[in-house]
Length: 247
Image (cartoon, rainbow, N blue to C red; front, side):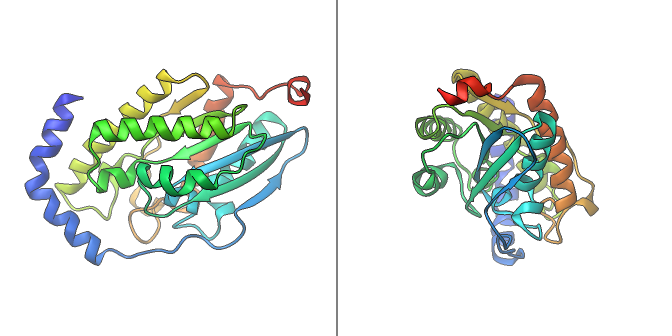
């Protein structure tokens, strides 16, 4: 990890001007329209909460139901044979600090079974320091567990930003390095907290599997990743049995 950090910051004199140019010129997509909650599947109820950045907000997709949250809810319902009650709390452009300050207070206390978290890409573009990212992610996880004490928190790994078509070189390479560093910190956070899992993002979309902005994955790609994520989750986690839910 230290060599990644050193190389990333060494590339900043070249990459930073590219990043500033993109902030002025890159296309801006609105959050997806439609409901932020729903119900799918059949069986005993399972309550899923999704918290995070533009991925949870459905940017690049026709609706939240066709973005990662909706796809993941369908896959979880199928894999675990449960009726999934899902809700998405997304904030486009949010870094980990903003999730803790603005989204976490909106999380309703409830009998959540699973909390899906997407965060980190905006900390890459916002140049959040490693120590700050780790500390604020720990606080976010602690806050989520305080509001959802029965839930397992699943940290969705950062995407491989070195494949984002929008980003020119060397910014693309630098962003990929930084995403790997922050994702390793997220895995470290998960290892330090019981009831927290981390799943690295291994799916690498082709250029035509991105939304037209070249930055967000399209609906089909998010669906493909949701399938992988749910299957990996099933190998590591099982929902609480009905008897425990009734306690």
